[in-house]
Image (cartoon, rainbow, N blue to C red; front, top):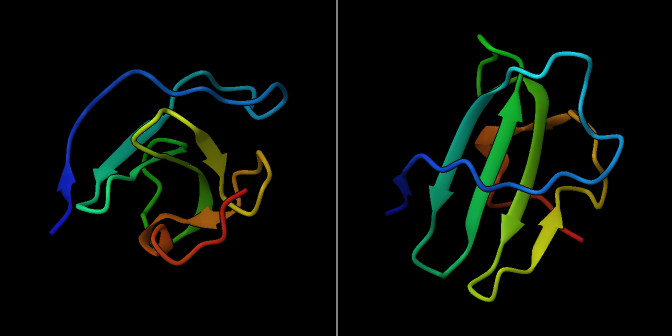
Length: 84
């Protein structure tokens, strides 16, 4: 079962941030060694397709959902999204 924790370390490629610098954050650590971090506007539901999501492996390698920097993913689907 994943555990939800808080952390401030996330790298976002240039151009990914919207005009607002305030985001709600979700971070999940899975038993398989991956950490998933999602950012969205405050008040966004995890079921909305308004999330930027990245996956970090145990070596620190970070990949982005759908291979892009867009805020267009559903955080509830973090484990089934394609990352590159």
